[in-house]
Image (cartoon, rainbow, N blue to C red; front, top):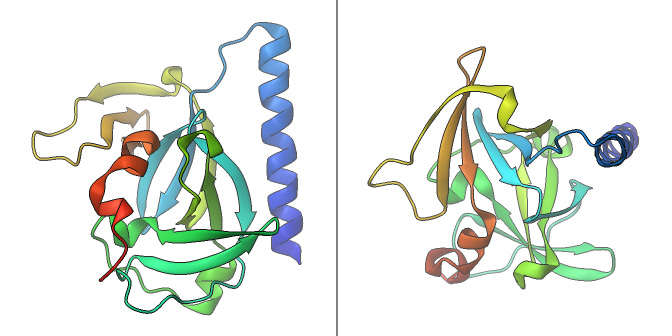
Length: 175
């Protein structure tokens, strides 16, 4: 219950910050920052949808290991993808860790009914939060964008959720 209240407070703070930035003419944040399996990711706000606390996920047999199953989010069934596992990590998912995680639904405009399991929401970021950037490596997945480096030396990988939602591997959940 405390996790739901904390998530609700975060959503209210994010919404008020976005509204204040719009009305004051400030630069609006470009990304939602998240952490998954110890890595840092930036997701374009235009591609991100609603944020949900962890909920019961019904396993679907004969699917990829990174496809956790389906969850009832606001009365609709949504496919749940473990972002870290999709990107090749092998995180240990305990009940405690899952209870502290969030589900980030993809924007309905992407026309994919899916949510990404992330370990932690890290707030909003804009380009002025970073001191350096690097283009994606030649062998990076097509949905990897620029890597940004903040003043603490932390590397933030931009994920193009639109490209991810159209990627064959993401769409092919059968094992």
